[in-house]
Image (cartoon, rainbow, N blue to C red; front, side):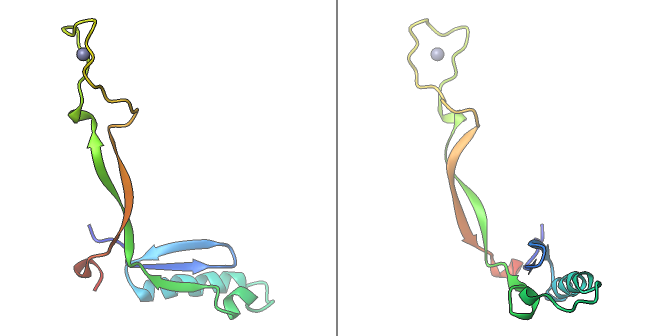
Length: 109
Ligand SMILES: [Zn+2]
């Protein structure tokens, strides 16, 4: 799956979108500015002084699994009452942490 490579942020309405190309990002930001200036009052200060921006996405979040349910015992009807095997204590099927991995160059030329 090819993911978007650029993010554009419009400070006026605190809105953002992601895009495959810089040109698409610029087009969206231009249209946001056009909407914002329709009242004839001119550009917003945020637009004039650099708070709108287009950035290239360099890192993305990634779930790094450290353990999961399949590594643990699950009680069944055949378990003894005294069964003290270690069971999975969480409501979700895996635990881990979030890392931010660099976007691979072939995904982000
Ligand atoms: Zn058991």
